Amino acid sequence: MKITWLGQAGLLLETGGLKIVIDPYLSNSVESIQPHFYRRVPVDERFLGLSPDVIVLTHDHLDHTDPETLKHYLGENTSVCVLASENAWNKVRARFGGIHNNYVCFNRGTEWTEGDVKFSAVYAEHSDSHAIGVIIEAEGRTYYVTGDTLYNKRVFEDLPAHIDCVFLPVNGVGNNMNMADAKRFCERLGARAVPMHCGLFDEKRPADFAYENKIVPKFYKEIEGI
Image 1 (spheres, rainbow, N blue to C red):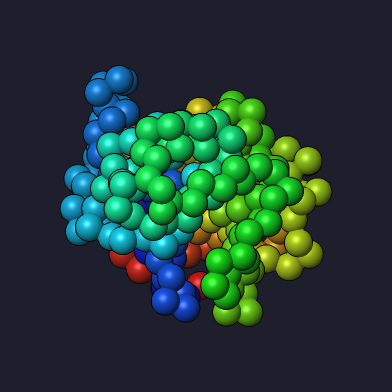
Image 2 (image 1 turned 120 degrees about the vertical axis):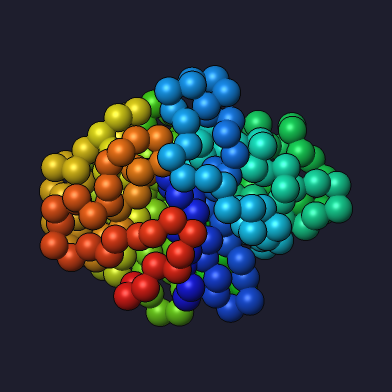
């Protein structure tokens, strides 16, 4: 499994011939509405030329479900499986259509298998009432992308007993865990962690996350050691 950080909460996973994109934000859409949330790191346009097989959208916030990014991946002639929580599902299905795209309403408790990869939607505590995290099982390993979430005891009810690596927000604003709560979250999971959702709209650094068993990601680079 090759996993690349696209910045903010975006990930590109490559496994078994599949390209899987999660919550890509590769535009300046947020800045156009909230100017103080400007990009500190420019868009790497190489990633706008991807042809993803699967797109996962954890919730309907602009830095996770961004039409300006998704227009590069979804159209009348594309064939993409889109796993989207309900609010995001309604938005992208109406906006992009395409008879060959498969829009799956991917709410909590839903499972989907694509090729050799299994996806499971799990609870997230966020301001979008249909927000989810996603468990990804592939190549004998289990990955957990929390999506945007606060530390909430209900989250753990949906999780498998063993997780190899968790990808989680640590910025502490917008109904996300701060670094202290994210550290407690990871300690409870006992998993290796990749801190995200910082460094794009703020000056916070993933390297400052105090959890010992972490991997510090770099923008647009493969995350090694997972």
